[in-house]
Image (cartoon, rainbow, N blue to C red):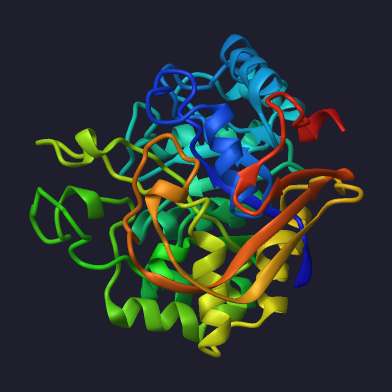
Length: 359
């Protein structure tokens, strides 16, 4: 057994409110613990989205009652809430700006709206941007103009990681994350896929950003030193939704991320130190997160097994990695001295998780 610090995922979708049939704070944080994550930061594109004091309190109340691991809740940047969001900044995990393709009503197309948020949001708290290709270049310009940090979510393309590298060399305050599925994609098509739609192996492989090319993936591996975080972008939807005529984008990822990363360790592409740096040390620094005392995970780095949805805790009930052989498994998780996961069983009770902004 090897002991690692509790992992941090700065990019998850808990689907509460409005999508509890596919995930909520209870099932989502159970999945987090099973995957070795003791702290998660939840995105604001729920129904309704988290954009003001009332919706933020509603999301936090649900988390207080149900969360089995520690948590934070992002605010969403809308067209008319720059002042209100800034006033709530201290209670949030950060500000999420949707500047490119997304699922929900929060996309901001007018760059003057971006400017309002960059002007008002406190400089010591993170802005996270969903921005792809040219939109990403534009938000890097904003970061330079306003001399403030920006974190780029789910980088997937060669052109993006090379631009981020160049921006950092020029002194811009930019950090970024990459999702495991953009480094190690699911099978194409996944087993039992019923909807073989255009280009991506059917609705079950619909995700934003889209699955990238082998050349893009190699560029991410080649520029690993420019990647600050691994973040799952855990985005559960039911199979009925994914196999339907208009499949929503997103994969569940909390329970597959660490096995995939540990498999990459065995393949010589990563080290355990690489995982700790990008799943613990850097997220704590970038998002100003408190220490979790007496918190760690135990892994069996040599366990050989296959990913199966029937063994997972996410409510959506499937994984695009179904049947994939992996090497390395979480055996035990301890949160603030309490055993919260062991040998496939979540032991934490709902509501034991703490809000990172109350610590």
